[in-house]
Length: 101
Image (cartoon, rainbow, N blue to C red; front, side):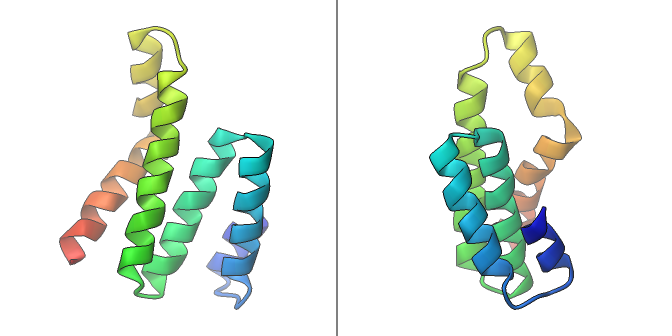
């Protein structure tokens, strides 16, 4: 949350805060938080016109979502998990970013 807020305020320490949060989230194994931090980093890089870094973080975000999805039993639950707009927008954002290249 601190990193997202710093990003919205365009603070200089945004990248540092998000990277520290990502490192901690990965260490704790909180994949739901991890994919969100990757997304926030992607948005940060996109805002700074660092498209390749943004794409890399979007891909990491999507890979983390894939890992979560694979751990869910049942097709309906997987579809339900992926169809939540909060998660689905990551896929839409990466498509938009690819069009900028």
